[in-house]
Amino acid sequence: MALLFNRACSVTIAKPDGFFSQKPNAVVVTDLRVQFVVEKTIGEQPNTCDVVITNLAEGTRGQVVAKPLYVRLDAGYDGSLERLFTGDLLWGTSAKVGADCETTLELRDGDRAFRYARVN
Image (cartoon, rainbow, N blue to C red; front, top):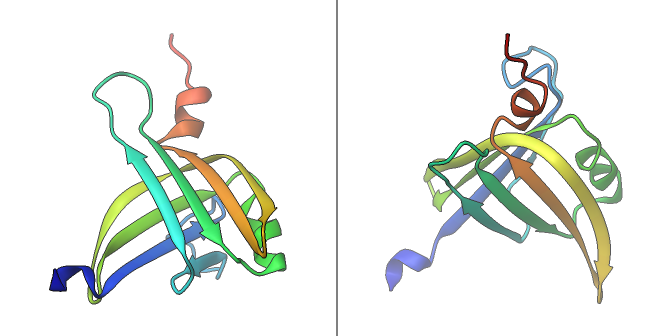
């Protein structure tokens, strides 16, 4: 039961110039409530991930629902986070739920490449 105590989660949201650019364009969410569901498939459809972040700042909410975005989800225990998902934003929205504001992000693994691919 002690392993459930120090859970941690990190969501990194970056513009398409990527995680490797020198410009600071990423938002890292670490200390807010984050709910997520990751579905991995063997088929030809992209893997999916739904992320709900509670009480993001108003300026950040506007940034994270605008496409195109790369999103990286890491979770685990303090000091030992593992990458669970990396993908593209399919759509995002924010809504008021009671006193909280929930930002919902629907992600797909390689979605932009999947949608715009061509076969010759």
